[in-house]
Image 1 (tube, rainbow, N blue to C red):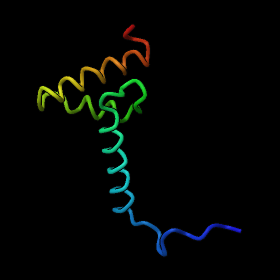
Image 2: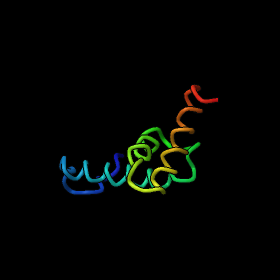
Image 3: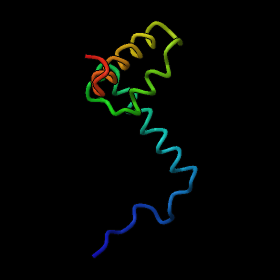
Image 4: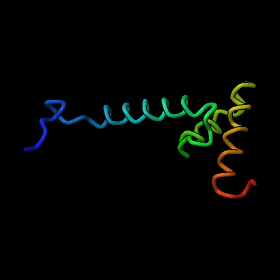
Length: 75
């Protein structure tokens, strides 16, 4: 027996986009301090924030190192 849908109507494109943006934002926030386990998308978002403040620069530097270790060009 199939499950009942959560909503009566399917999500609109704007609702899907907003939900994806919120998931990405949450993943980026959770990636700070846990760069080794963070998804690539979150690491890239951290690196995009470089230059905004000293805190962003530090997070971007850690993300760059984690990204490099993950793909083997930083040992």
